[in-house]
Length: 264
Image (cartoon, rainbow, N blue to C red; front, side, top):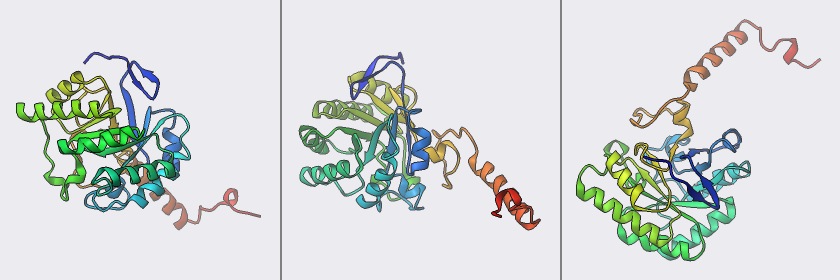
């Protein structure tokens, strides 16, 4: 896919947009200004709290992590997920989105859109001047068991439905489309069919940007099943375990704390 100039919140990008998740101030401080976008995603349910899915993530959890993260974000664009069950209709969606943005100061809210009827929620929020990212393809909030997730867009009918949904979401006012776990052909067709940017996760390089969970990036996640699209850039689990072994050895041999690390 050829690079094309795209615009997000008035800033023009001529190269693909980078996005990573952050759930703590420390990680936000690392990411700010390096990645284009920082997402406080509901994947914190499984990543931080060991949940089997994201359906038990609450609005209060998103508020707490969103506030902590975005206080430490000054350069990157801030995005936060609307958790499961908080946008069942237009009235509920607006109330919760407005509250979430006000509390966390996020620039975008992200909603998972499974059906055409949900497009009206995006339209309502957009009409109320809330900047929305629509999440299509695989929508994790729909699953109690992540092992049952399958790639979408393997046949012509699925591809056409995704393209139609993306077009309708753009028309409804979505500012970006996040595409999860769709085939290369589907991602390319969606991206080329709309004028707003697409950000992919497990959806090939036929998107205008890419997002990953930070814990997956550094191999900190303890999930038994690692999705095919995850690339570990460092093995923090190995690095961390080696550091712990050295600490334990120093303690056992009374080398820590030494004079340097003690008060006189």
